[in-house]
Every structure is written in structure tokens, then in C-alpha cells.
Image (cartoon, rainbow, N blue to C red):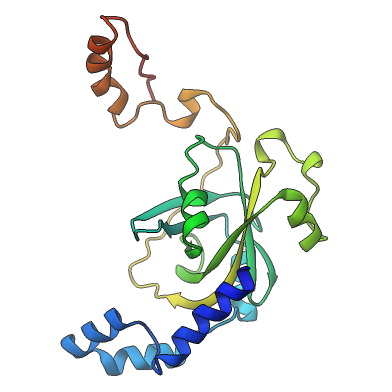
Length: 233
């Protein structure tokens, strides 16, 4: 199924006769950037991962994941892990683990109805460069992933908070550079990561005050009984 979707997407893109999509081209023509855009498409946009891209992905510890639902409403989420947590299976396939989270499953839910995915990886500490990887996603079980990646560490040998509950398998359709000129230099610091925790304090508590703001209304609807207590960050 994933291969069929990918082939259809690539065919539709090829039939358009020009790189990019209609909205991009309209604005390029309107704003006079078409020549610059064509040069970028020609020099930087590829349909498979280059060896340097594969090495780059293999040392990243974070990624930003963009998905949208069947109506096109978007969601952008953050994923992190040790270097290599995003697995490069070949020059057209990558995969990343989904750990136990808050139970909302927004990104995975979007993928069920709309397989298109955008992954943005950025090096804030060494080379100050970014990589966009776009493609089509499928949700697979840890057992299925183990069959696809024989070098993958077995789930039972991993700490409980770091055992994937699902994997996202991405068929790459497009990859390109994100220029370095606006990427800040950050200095990494050691910290304890409480993988898989449900402790509100370790998860950030009610940092943005949403729970505290809603608490009075919840108490009113429950006859003066507190619905929940906001945790301090």
C-alpha cells in the first residue's frame, strides 16, 4: 500500500512537468523568484538520500515532524533520542520510533488518514545546517520493524521508557538542504532524561498555566470539588 501511494504521488508530480507545486509556482511568478527557485530545485532537491544526508541523519538526536489530517489541518511535533534513533534503511527509506507519550497520538492519527509527512532535522551544535525529508508514512509494529532492520536493538534489551510502541516507516520522495545563515549555535549540556515517565514535574507540569486557568470552571461544574490540581514545573 505504501509503495502504491508513493508511486502515485511521484507520478502526479512528474506529470506537472515542473518541480514544486502550483502554489509555489504562482508565488514564484508573482514575486519574481522563479529563476532562483529553479536553480535551487536543480541543484539541491533530490528524490533520494545522498550518502552525506544518510550520515547526517544517523548522528541527529532530534527532529521536527509535520503531519496533517484529511482536511489539511496541520500539526508539528518534536521527536528525540540518542544519535541514530532515526534509522536509515536505504536511500529512500527511513524510520523513527514512537515511544509512550501523552496518549493523544496526534501525529500517528494524522498518518492514518493522510500519509504525507515532513521531517526537519537541524544541526545546532556543529555544522549549523538543516535537512528537509518529505515522504509518505506507514505505521508498523516493533516486530515488523525488527524484520526490516536486522541490526536494530531488540526491544527487550532497551530500558522500559525507551522501548518503541510503534515505528513510523517513511518512504522518501524529496530531500533538500536548509541553509545555515539563520540557524543559531547552541551549546549542548548534559541532563537527565526521564524517558517514559508520567511524573508531571518531569514532563513540565502546567508550565503554560492552562490547567490552573481551567480549574475554577471545572470546580464550578463539579459542585465546588477540584477537578485536578495543577503541578508546578
